[in-house]
Amino acid sequence: MKILGIETSCDETAAAVVEDGTKILSNVVVSQIDIFAEYGGVIPEVAARSHLEAILPVINKALSDADCTWDDIDAIAVTHAPGLLGSLLIGTLTARTLAILHDKPLYAVHHLKSHVYANWLSGDKPIFPILALVVSGGHTQILYMPEHNEFEIVGTTHDDAVGECFDKVAKILGLPYPGGPAIAKAALNGDAHKYKLPHPKVAGLDFSFSGLKTAVLRAVQKELGLPISHPSYDLRNHLTEQQVADFAASFQKTAVDILCEKLTAALEQYPDTQSVVIAGGVSASAALREALPEAYFPALALSGDNGAMVAAAAYYEIISGVEPTDPYTLNIYPRISIEK
Ligand code: KG4
Ligand code: ZN
Image (cartoon, rainbow, N blue to C red; front, side, top):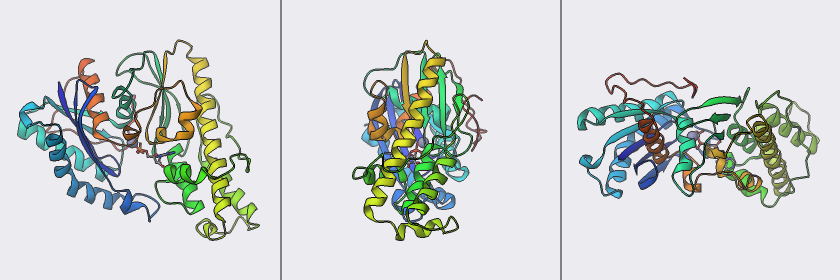
């Protein structure tokens, strides 16, 4: 079964053709990172406009790279939640129109589910029951997966997502958006033990990352001998390259340690777990990969947003008995939970 997966939930316009949920026939990703690098974050209206321009060429390239015509495609899958409203709208409206035009069944996929299923697109397949750590720009959750397409949220962040925290700390340090790769690069030359940063006290398997961001801000102000009223956007002008590297390394280590601590606690709570799966943009982190050698990680190219993972997730929905959605009425849900 060949599924065309379409993803536009944030700032990547992506489409891919995947066979039987595991074999990637094509995977086209057009990133808007260059547009947003200098702004320090995504501007929703600009993102939606960029998706509008890119979506049809990206889909056509995904079909031609896969050597497919519309006749070869068995179903269309699209991210309908969660994400930026305008971005989600472009992808879903395009998918709805194409499904009607080419008479294909349409599947609406939750973005976090897609990230998890990126782990079925390369290497060995994880074994159930699974604990999935989803770490992206918008979410930080631990999910218990007894079977395909069954998700229970067992831990979640009370405030910022870990990726968001990387992005905000990068901004404080004067590093570009997205913060994750920029911090990873700067950290290579830094001392991860130079600055002691606190671990948040959050009960159970939940997370909190807004305090860590503030702790970095305060540590930078203290290091520079500046008052806490000193504006954060100006601090980068006072930091040396070595200080940036040391803060990046210390922060990265703390963030990774926090994630690993909660994962360890989750494994104690769910002792029948057979595989640990890491998913979402932060799964690209080399530091996280090093800290969790036993866990499943997506191929690096599939860590960030892409259409292949959407097609994979839809395939496992289909074999789990999920019915296609109505292309005339499919809605978007910018904030809906994976459990709904
Ligand atoms: O999954 P994703 O591409 O988009 C969302 O669904 O949010 O995740 C993007 C997030 C950003 O916050 C980015 O800074 C982070 O993933 N990220 C990383 C790395 N690469 C991307 N965080 C830490 N280390 C990385 N190497
Ligand atoms: Zn994502």
